[in-house]
Image 1 (cartoon, rainbow, N blue to C red):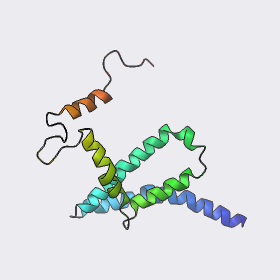
Image 2: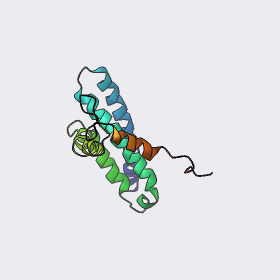
Image 3: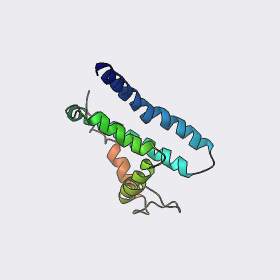
Image 4: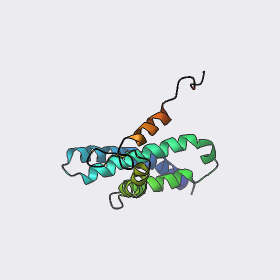
Length: 140
C-alpha cells in the first residue's frame, strides 16, 4: 500500500503542471494556428481565468494552506476549465467575467463605444483606480 500511495502522490504532483500548463500551452498554439475562432476564445478565456486564479491564490495563500484538499479541488476545477468536452473556461467567461466587465464599463461594443459608458468614463475610472495619484505612493 505504501508504494501505491507514493505512486499516487507523484502522479498527483505531475498532473498539476500537465493539466494547468503543458496541455493549455499546446492547445493555445494549435488554436492560434487554426482558422476557427471558437478555440481562440476558449484558450484566451482559460489564460484570463488561470491568471486570476493564480493571483487570488497568491493573495489567499495563508488561508489556503489550512485547506488540505485545496490543490485537489483546484486541479479538478482547472481540468474542467481545460477539457474540450466541457469548455469550462469559455462558459465561465461568457456567464460571469464578460458580464462583470460590461457592468463596470471596461468592454467595448462592436462600434467602438464602451458598454455602459459611451463617453469612456468607465475606462477612465479603471485607469484612475490602478494608477496611484501623486503623494499617495508608499515609501519603501
